[in-house]
Length: 313
Image (cartoon, rainbow, N blue to C red; front, side, top):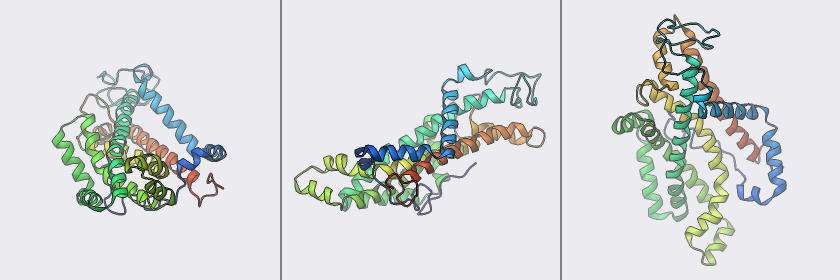
């Protein structure tokens, strides 16, 4: 629960095993390619199962006040640690609160934090990676030295320090974890941009006098979008684990608002007497992270030239 993506070249967000992906620009320009992409993507039953689960849990989280059977903070001292029943489908916790309702409301908090983390990281990393990879020179040197400095800190220590300084709230935790994710995205984007900037169409645009900003928007960014989108999809699972890990350590949203990590932390003392208390939030985290990974893997397979399901084959 407390693990964050390890720093360095083995960071799962760096994309060390990323294939040579096709560009979204080429895909968008070819209706036949787009049809092949969707046919390939939709043919992945595991990815569709994961996507369906994500849709269900996201809708349930958004409409938690309507979907949750009970108030997640309502205590029933006569039903403490109750086993699953018709009244409480997943049982109750140590204060008699309905576990199913707390999982639904906890999904609202955890999923919001997950998407906020990745969104903040990509908003910061995208311009930095584009500028560093395209302009090179001192811009590249300064940017990458800052990223190296961030990589030098253990991810968990860095996230804990920032979260402790900012205070306990959903937004502050998202900022703390996003800072850990930024260097990985910057390295990925920079590497893709360096490869694309040497292409003939970029050199042609430069020779015609196009400004760097226009070249990056119209020629570079569309051709590096595929690996970025795939890494975003894969990063969502790591972000959820990171958020749950900080909540497990007591840094995050405070009681009585439910959260997956906080629910597991409270349930550890009842692991022997009430295993359902820790089982259900733990299984929920496992299923959500697995669904994000299946979705990201399906995107990668559909755009991977080395895959039999690649859209260009």
